[in-house]
Image 1: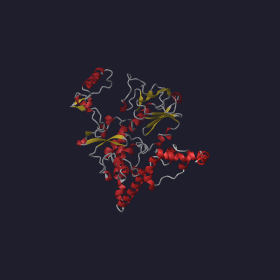
Image 2: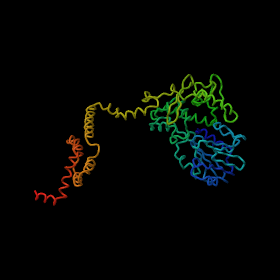
Image 3: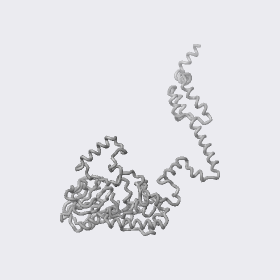
Image 4: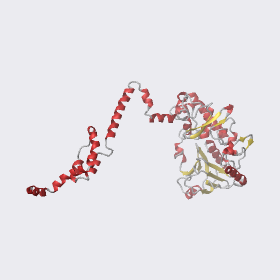
Length: 461
């Protein structure tokens, strides 16, 4: 994933080869996921005829300053890259474009041809990048929301320590926060923390001024060196963690150097089919794959030998897979006794169990208070169990529907049962549902409707 050194290498290449040249032709991809907020035709119209004045960068964002606004800006995302035909931009994106390569690439999102024939393209295979057309990119999000650039606007030691002392989150997560400092990504954060001997999960506010000074020094050295070599990882110092942190990096198996074919579906198609056939033959049981297969060097991200026998471990910090050396990067202070990566789970478990920390700290009168609360809870529970499952009014109305309308209206205004009458409440449903009780309920209704009929009967008697 491109970080500050890769984006800076692209900016320098544009500055060296494209400044002062006019855009003669432009092709913008019809991809609204990457081309943000403007149609391809409007984008092209805003570019053609303009001259590139400068190339600017902040954090992982790059934009071209033209002789008049609006200006194109590029947020590289996970796989964004700048290519200039015939020019080696950075080793990160495999150098220059050859004549045999597809050009512009099918993944090209932004393509321009300059008046001297030079061609520039911004590509993105994974479509997480953003290409925008803005009047003033520096004053608009996301660039306006970025923290100081790790290369161009480095903090002083005092500023860094003061900022860290206010942050109660893991240092790795803080370094990845582009609002805190812009340009540092996953591998740079791992590198500077390793060189500073700081655990990725160490709380930022717990770092001493000495540790903050060491971290400041390591950030400066790593970023500046990576930029100086144009993000060419082959030129990074051999003692850097970078060379060992990739758990799936091809290497040697049984002393033999393994090869990976760049396009197995093409020239090595026969070899690729043999691999598939063998995998099917053994039922995809990796333990039965031939010993010279590259598979066996694609180790899981668990542990791997490092300098002086130290091992690299992989945890999740700041939401990212994080490489560190447990033998050198230890949790300090109050965090020393905590399990790596599990402080939050333990805290939430205590909350679920009823905030045990609060009860343990309340030694004076704590048991008495707890017992009183238990009594209240039990009493409330017994009341709930004794009450009917349905509200008092609804069962009464439903049962009385079998009786007269007059009775139903009278019962609707009856008061709800009290706790003292719980035993009677249990018996009432049985009495109301009996046939005899229904007949008793109908008697008043018959008398009311046949008052004149009853009088003659009495006279006959």
